[in-house]
Length: 262
Ligand SMILES: NC(=O)c1ccc[n+]([C@@H]2O[C@H](COP(=O)([O-])OP(=O)(O)OC[C@H]3O[C@@H](n4cnc5c(N)ncnc54)[C@H](OP(=O)(O)O)[C@@H]3O)[C@@H](O)[C@H]2O)c1
Image 1: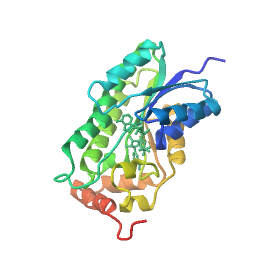
Image 2: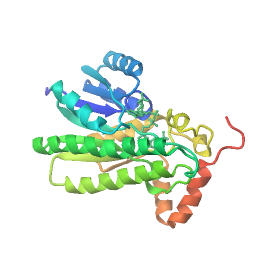
Image 3: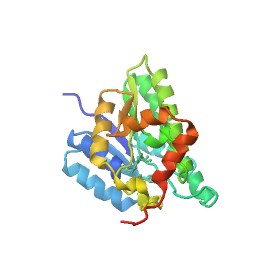
């Protein structure tokens, strides 16, 4: 049997990224896991080894900092680890009216959700194309299809991720390297608390991160372009039939705070 390759997962200590890491660990892969919190990285590494990962390398890195993606790449290279699968999962949002939300926070979100994702994709996709093998999973969102008031910067970053991914899928079509966009709807993770959005209407009906990760894992392994979370296909279709302003009005309702917080 061929030795299993190494999978690099950003955002592997929580939510969808952690569930993806668990799926690869159970299949006996080697993993590089990336997030900021060192203790959570250590705890996650221990758990992943317990459930079957052949080797886990935790790397603490703040991908919202300029230059951090290149630093991460250099650290992985220094350890002579070859990445067979890249999962760009780490991402964040900030809830609120754009006229009131902190700009620094939003520029950091763009750096994390867009710039670092592009940098890591550039660095690892080049290597994969040279070897003519490899897989990349990009975390898009239902927000990729919906201009979203009260989460405007976040939704715009996810529109970027989907457009970028679809263009690269086309560029890669004559190679053995595949790229997949995972498109979750509202998912029960730490995302909403971190985004100061724990009491918004969108959180009333959330999918489990394990369900979303499984759909992403299967699509990635099969080289499929998109993995759409349950219930989201009809939303995508609905959005495609409406004007952007109609979509924004619909999305805004989901972003409003519930009248009785749970
Ligand atoms: N939850 C949803 O409803 C939903 C819907 C659609 C798409 N998504 C996308 O799914 C992805 C995962 O989100 P999630 O819901 O699973 O979120 P989550 O539970 O908040 O997990 C986020 C993960 O990313 C890491 N992270 C956050 N900021 C980082 C930074 N600056 N540098 C490095 N790592 C960082 C976190 O660890 P540290 O804090 O320790 O760094 C954590 O491991 C994101 O791209 C998100 O946009 C989520």
